[in-house]
Length: 390
Image 1 (cartoon, rainbow, N blue to C red):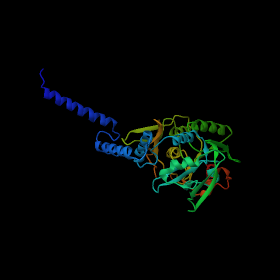
Image 2: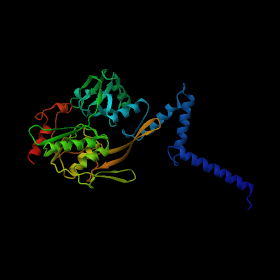
Image 3: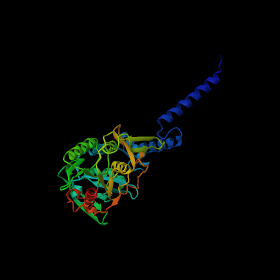
Image 4: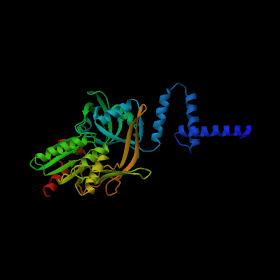
């Protein structure tokens, strides 16, 4: 077959163009159809790198760019952290760290650092920090919600040292500066007891970690062996955690095979989580408040939708989205991947779960739940009275 030289040259040029476009499409973080975005990104980053008055390690440019990409979603739960912040994050999810003991989030509505809940028996709880409080400054340095990771870094530190935390109180609107002594914190996620003078068992879950499901089941068995005929499940001030752990706890009550929660991603793909356990037929009350979020709401929603629990307290936090967390190269990526729905099809994101029995309680009491007597804790008292009349 005879092919003219000009044709060969044209084919070679076309091949080069096709190869270039394919290569750009592969390396372009904005995709094949956004070449101009890629071009703008390259021009501006090259200008900064070439013209900036001093040298900056390339890794710093890259990590900051990835952080900006995550921030561009506008979602406070989608993030890329690296360096010391990544190390601190791994400490947090391990449940063992030195600090003041508070769960916080970046409130995008007013760009503040907002408290989800204080961890039980920690300096934050003892100082009266509760859900809805806003942390304005740490050690005299003011922080916005976007600077939450820097604030967390400064709240942590060697056990025995102190740190000043300026807080805008949710109940009074007063701004106070608290001097807190950092302590080593080992988070115990499940605690149980028999309520004196009753046949009511009580289990409190402070957060959902990998071991929470097993711990809960063991303590539930122990309580029933002690004669518990009904149960109060306290999820107040529980900010959430692993979805699988919430499913494990729900599986103690929801009939095997029944749906506990399902998620939908942006493509409409559904992932369903079903019960895999043996059903305990115990009259059950769940306690929730403004600090009950995420996996706490998954568990509450499942028990409520299946008619297995009476819910008492105040409306929950309203975090109905799911994050996937994985370790990347030199950092940790958290990506919001889906919304979650209770078995009835309700998505409670930014809405929360309304209790069956709304019993308000002073915010100051939420900061010392573990110290309250039964008479002082109106919500727990209501739960015991409800179960006594079942």
